[in-house]
Image (cartoon, rainbow over all chains, first blue to last red):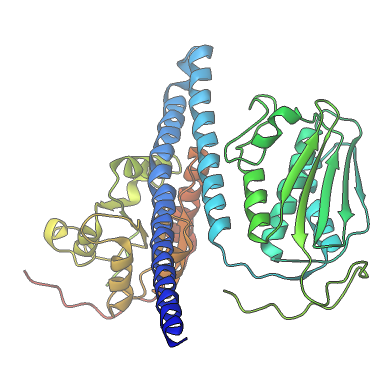
Length: 274
Length: 154
């Protein structure tokens, strides 16, 4: 008996040792990631600014005397520099989403969706858009990060319905019992081929040519990263030319998280940040 | 010390210097810039010593300060300016590629007067330079001149 206790203690302390080492390794990796994204932020932006700067100055200095084709070349240089700038910003945002402290709290999802639609109004200017928001349950999530998820999903829906009149964008709750709440955003836009659906949530993965629909390929990667940090899942269904539906789930936690809650509850104080 | 209508640009990257000066030029502020190429030169300029011993006396209306520089970086220059009784009222604007939170936090803790992230696209970059230049050179009321400093003898 005593021998077994000793053995067990040794095993535990070894396991403890390994865990400590893992934690230290993780911390180092996090530090490296921090300095990596810092250097991306600073060092990649500078040469890009120079490319854009000198091309603009050249256009200013010689523009009127240049043949049409040469002016076009300069515009393309500027356009590419601007695009790479957006890629870098997107990558930084993606890395920040992975590191930002999570402060989940009870959220009024319906109000958050409404605010996001309002925020996106400039992008929908002059278009015929039917927003259809179903009753939405409150969810438990970080307000800033969930807002980012909604901005990405709704602005995607706006973008890929650009050719539709009217565009229909529906936000609803697919299920709200069991272990998780499932929320979806459905549009009647250009859709996608399910064969390539697995690529949708990858960083820099795009299913449309940039000339057709501009973008950086970061938005859905951010959505997946944020949702998986909440312990949820992301997936999509679509058909070419017949629209797409994007789903995300959030775990239902705690005793107060019973199905069929009323739309508004008082939020409990946010838990201590980790 | 009297204030002179000059901007001190502290920037180690020759291309950034050229682009900043070009942007100021297109708004007729091009003749108002002096350039220090790192933190050591920036302090030499303020103390009118070394390479800048012969410059006209007076303090610039604003210092545009990069963060990442060889020898002495922008954060250390900022710290020394704000800790100095002679220079602490001198407006300092960080002008940097970094939008990272730790940099922002450190600069404000050290008492920076403004923080501007250099836009990647030139039209926005030029606009930012113009606004910063015009604000500090033309619009802003400078702090009253402090008592004359002891000229450093070397």
